[in-house]
Figure: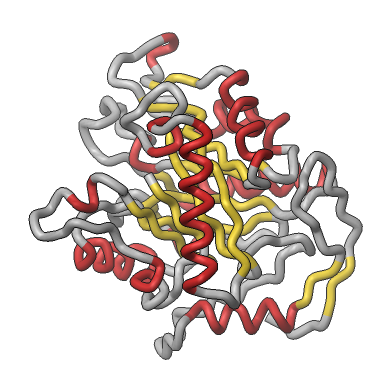
Length: 316
């Protein structure tokens, strides 16, 4: 990747409280990538493909996200706690991360499951249910209270990304709204969700990135972040074919739960060994402490020891 000093571009930032620079400091970008690799000497990290458009959040910021669905207390902390309690707890996590690494600004986020996989076929035999837009609107209003980002996450079941992604265009056209996809519930085999682990291919990822890139260009907004969850090899095939887009920042999120050594091994196998761009890590408040002898979840100081350091951390 050729070194540059700045890249100017006109970017609009309507409906967002987060300031957006109009130039990209590529020297700082490179320095942050090196720091994020945390001393890795294998050549896998840092990833250098193309520079993002100005206004890119990563790697200049670390994102701490609360995940869930407003209709379920069992799908994550976002829907488990009353709104004010949840937002206050998220802000405490942000504070902990900022204290653990003062060199990287920490931003809160609400990661909302906008399409949930279902055990019953439902209308169209797709085994998925779209959440009403009124719920998404509610999450966006929640996020505004603490100047947080919003991620909309989809579990497509037997549907497809091509059918589901365009439904969220009006939200993804907002500069503070980003996207996540969950291969676990992409049932290309035709199996019912939950019967086996699903999969996405690089072609699916590239479709999403190209779609998001189009929205960025059309609306003159900062780059989108795409989060892809992963805890097995088959969940993402042909990772080397994933393309880099200056309008999209890709995060591979380690989605496995369990005791620390198990989670770290999953991270090494499916994030570290198959690098794409940025790394993410999920912490389960309940499932991670089910194993006897483990009474606390992994802390910021634990995750900052990883190579690479995760830039996106999700709490469920």
